[in-house]
Structures are given as C-alpha cells and as structure tokens.
Image (cartoon, rainbow, N blue to C red; front, top):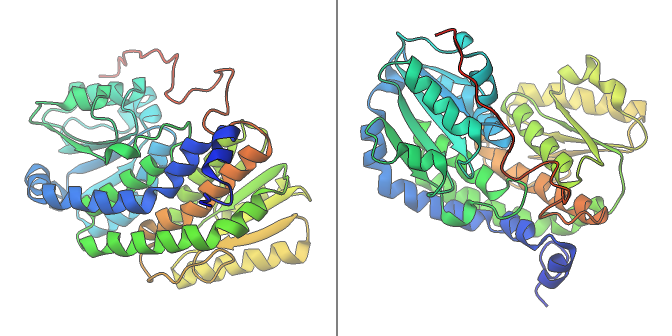
Length: 378
C-alpha cells in the first residue's frame, strides 16, 4: 500500500491534509524541473541582469512578505558577499511603511520579488512604489503564479522579468512549502556566481533520501503533543528557523506557539520561554566555527534539562543526511523538509485540517484587508 509520510493518501484526504502532504513530497521533482527552466532561460536572465551585480553603487533588494521575505533573508548575505553590489533583504511590509529608509533615487536598483500567488496587495504596491521613486529601477519577479497580479504587472515591461516557477509549486494548501524552496533555489541559482545545474540535481537526490529516511522518525516526533517549539539557526539558518517556526504556527492554527532565534542570541532573554512542554530544534550550520557555538548551547540546554526535547537538523544531527559542505543557504531547502513534515503531523494531531487550518477565515492563504497608503516622503 502506498504511504505518504506514514499515512495513506486516503487518510491524508480524510484529515484534510492531502494537498500539503503531496506538496511537501513533490519538492525534489520540482527542483529538477526548476533546473531545466533555469537552463532554458540562462541567456535571457544574464541579458536582463547585465552588470548590475558587479556595480558597486547598485542596490539589490530582495523582498516579499511572510515566508517570501524569509526566502530573501536566507540568501541575502551569501549573495552580498559574492558581488561588489549591495544586497539587502527588505520585506515589502517594511518598504511600504518606511521607504525613505531604504530607497535612493540616485542608486541603480534591482528589486527581486518573491511571491507564491503574486496577489498579495503588498507585492504589487512595493513594486509600484520603487517604480515611482527610483528612476530606471528594474524588477525580477520570482513567482509561482503566471496569472497573478505581480506577473501581470510585469508582463510586456522591458524593466521587468517574470521568472515563473514550475506550475505545481503554486501550493494549493495554506502553507508555503514547495513554493518556498523553489523560489529560494531560483534566486540562488540566478545570483550565485558559482552556480552549477548539477547542484540542484544533487540537492534533489539528497531531498529524496531525506524524505524517505526521515518519514518515520518525524511522524513519531509529530505524534507527541507540545505547547511550544523553538527553532534555532546561525547565520542564514536563523532565517530558516523563522520559516520553520512560521510553519508550525500556521499549520497548528496558533495552538502551538513557536519562536525562532540564533544559537548565540537565544541566551539573551528568549531562553526564558523554555519549559517542560517545549521542543527545541536546531539547524546545524556547515560552518565549523558556527557549529562550535551551536554545540555549546546544545550542551547547556541538555545540562539544564528544562526542555522536553532538544534535537538537531543538519549534518551530523538527529535528522541528518550525508550532504556536501555547501554554504548554509544552499542546504536550507534540504533541512526545511524535516520542519515541513513536523508541522504537518502536528496539525493532524490537533485535528486542524492542514490544508486549511483557519476554517474561520481569520487568517488567509492570500493576505486580505490591506489598505495601501501613499507615502509623502517622496
């Protein structure tokens, strides 16, 4: 009998979680499809980007809201270190409220927008704001929905390039899963000067092994009730921790409280939230110095015995896979596979229907109720 994360597809359908389960499981296949899409557009993308990455006075803004913002945060420092230009991750929610802090008319600017549906009001408003404020700005829209407002806004515009993800990445479920990892890998592939298509193929192979190997232990962990979950990560993985924490918060309808922090920052106050109903999960960095700091905190938490459980995700961790020593940003989609499964199981445990854990409509798949205001600073 075919199983999907230790349940049959029919069981997931009855639980209201089949879409989300399938969308988590399909990611390695979608990464391969993404690699083919990127190869077919390599020349066009290079022509669109021109020399902006090698221009010191240029600004690259990685933007989005919620999960889409975290995708930019995960890769920003990696890309910033690789090029002379300035690369910053600035959420659309910050751009719209405080544009004067981030935009300069005189600076060549490329805005890279991440958007699953492209229909969130902030997505199109942020692009229009930059267009109004910064002459000759350009826009790379990384989106999963060819029919979304963001894609339509950029269609036929020479200053815009719509980089569409594989169609199946436009998740039907409430939570962003395959959309998140596809958009993150797309941006890394386009912006990383050392990118080779073989990296995505290897990542897909590792992802398939991880999904199979972690399925039973993650299901077992997800069957245990917790009140709080802490995700920790260093450097780019701190933003991965934010995404993982958001997944558990979303899919449990807020019934399981979650926070994210860095391994070093956690001692500075947030550690106070840990009690005997708390699960602590740490993403292990590929950087040897970062791993030493992480190891110190893990040893401290184990000595304190104040958490219900402390587990690690990453090379040599409790949830591990024999992966190359790549930069953390490249390995982030692999480690996220564990967190996505865990959130799915916790949602099912609470009988919340993972594909739509907010039946009341208080929180929506595409954000609603946002009024866009004109900013008079410009």
